[in-house]
Length: 342
Image (cartoon, rainbow, N blue to C red; front, side):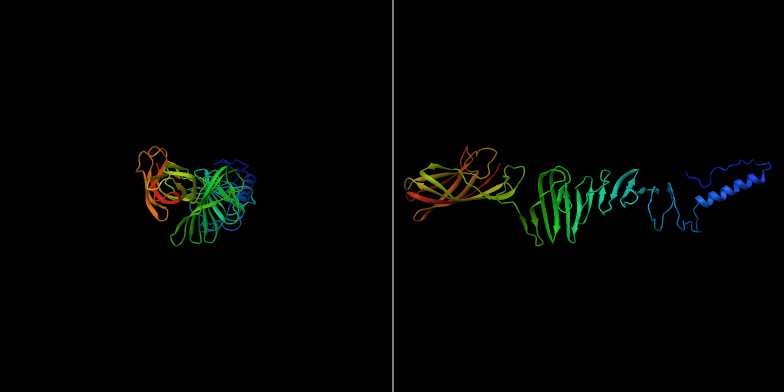
């Protein structure tokens, strides 16, 4: 503990006559030490004037007022520690609890939460709170424009905080948007792509639901997606020649896939049961085990049109469009069907 009065040069013993010179030397040192080291107090026990304190100032009550200048030590209370970090010219601050610094305020006004975030990322513009790891942040970009980010920060452009993928949520202009960026290298540019949005009118829409490069197959994830495809077309019964895919589209919601096709082909014989086999757009984990796992309907155009049905083909990942021919030669089959992927 710091002392105000240094050890006295002369030792005086009670009950003996002390030399007046020794008494005066001791007294003068006490006066000089008090004037040099002590801090004046008012009746309310407040420190007044400009005082320089080196070391630790311990307060058992509450500090009221302002502490100005460079704090070179610690201000210690009963519940924690408040101290500066870095060079005296820096305004970066750290707040400690139980001897561990877990909250940091950078000179730019950004906050790092966690013992490893003594130097938060250099966000510009705006301010951010990073939590646990660099790039895991809540960032205020502009008025009415806020981001929640993972593994990315903004410094005149989005940058990877560490090597790996990144993702984000943004609320701006009344629109909620979720997106991500593929895996990238720390410090390089991260191209954030929006993928799903909810606008201020309650409309939900995607930015990459149609013909996404990543096929939405399987049942672990119940996708919402759509696309076009070029089916494999083969003869079942009574068809021949060149098969033409005019259009084949699909939509998946959850595990239900709905398909619509317009396919040109040639019919061999009139008044004959005719079957055209078409592959499904999103493969199952195995073949159909019966004729009822996919079903639908359609028509074949001749001079008029004839109705047909669509059923799954047992032991395959195809469906059969079936009808009774009304003529021979070229025709177009228009049909749709639904199946539950597995």
